[in-house]
Structures are given as C-alpha cells and as structure tokens.
Amino acid sequence: MTTLLMLPPQTSTTRQWAKRLATAVPELSVVVAEDTAEAARVLGEADAAYGTLPRGLLAHAGRLRWLQAPQAAPPAGWYYPELVAHPVVVTNFREIYNDHIGAHIMAFVLAFARGLHRYLPRQLKREWRPEPLDTSVIHLPEATALIVGVGGIGAEAARLAAAFGMRVIGVDARRREAPPGVAELHGQEALDALLPRADFVILTVPHTPETEGFMHRARFQRMKRGAFFINIGRGMTTRLDDLAAALGAGQQRLYIMPSLKLVIVRHGNTNEGR
Image (cartoon, rainbow, N blue to C red):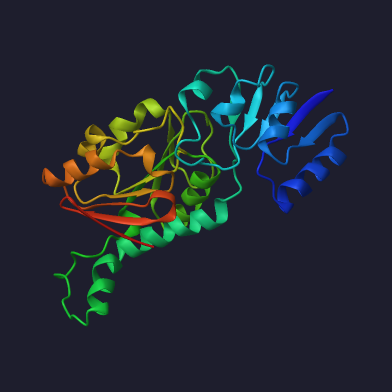
C-alpha cells in the first residue's frame, strides 16, 4: 500500500482533507503527523508527503518519491540545497487561485492604463495636476501583454486581457496549445526576443530553484521603455537590485507586484504599499 504523510503543522482543514482523501482512495494509507517527532517516525515508510519538509526531517525520507508543496509559490527558504539535490519530485498547486489573482492582475493593468497610479496620490494630496493631453492613457486594444507562465493564473489573466481587446502573447515551458485569449504561444526560449514587444510584462511563474532571479538586469533592459512589469509570483523570481539598477540607468518606471504587494520603484527609490 502506498503511504501519504501529511506533514505538520496541522489545521482542521488539513485533517479534513486527509479524511476525504482516505475515503476517496481506499488503497492509499494517509497518515496525519501532528508534530515533528511523529513525522520523523513515519517518514521512513512514506512514499509521498504533503507540506513543508525541513532539513531535520529530510534524512528520514528514505523512500520518499513525491512531495506536494502546500502553496503554489512556497515561501523563501522552502527549497534548500539538500532538498534540491534529493531525488524526490516536488509539485505545487495549480489552478486554485485563478479567479482572484487574474482579477487582481487586471486591476493593476487597468489602473496603469488609465494613469491612476499618478492621479490617486495627487488626489490624496488635493493636487490638481493633470498630465499633458494624450500622455497618461494606454489604449488597451492597441497594447500587448506578455504573460510569462501560462498556467492556471496566466491563462485566466490572458482571457481577461483579451476581453479588453489586448493582444496577448504567452510564454510557457510546458504548455503547447494556446488557451483562450492567447494570440501567440511560445516556449521559454523565446522570452528575450518577445520582451521588446510588450506594453505589460506579467510574470506568473512561482519561485523554484530554476526561476530564482528569473527577471534580471539584461531582461529589464530588453523591455520597451515605459512598459509595466507585474509580478504575482514570489519576489525572489526577480532580482530587485537589478531592477533598481536598470531604473537608475535611465529606464522608464517599472512596477512590480510580488505576492500581491505593490512595490513602485522610481529612479532607484522603493516605496511599498498594499
């Protein structure tokens, strides 16, 4: 019988998941470890595990073949060198945040396209300072969105962007068929060539050892001047020092949103707000 270990800490939700899974797949032995000591005792017999596997427990994972991360983008430190070198296959959640984060992406696209990032701060300070005519608006039917990572979230963002008339280009390492709304789908090797075409670059890839520092100075330099950068993955997918350096070298403003936090970087100065 295959054994799945639910790693601690537990919540009422994870305990309920374990019961439902054991009922749905009776040939699977589901073990819920309430603490680290119990996890260490059971881990040696586990074929699969769900949750966070710290260094101290990894040595007990003699037969572990599959580790399911508890989030689409695990927090910094979830991957460590010993885990990366281990033969276990790590997977993450897909297509469970599509609606909320897809809408959040479009909220930023619309705000930037209509210049609200300029006007709202002025309104709060009671300043009447309009931008020169025809300079603060991006007409979305004439704009291009480049979505890097066309998984569940990326595909939903593409559908919404296309509904506003945008031309959507997708880049994905695995997907071979374009989902609805994507006019062009390319492999990841095409990213550098596509960056200069985009008015909005939307990064949806999660943080993994392979994607750490994925957006770096050379890629920022390839972006169109005045383009917007929206990152809904973990901040470590982007080298923020490289972003600041690119801005300091005279590139236009870029906007980065790691993990649903908006960070506006302007000429080397960083201001954060939720």
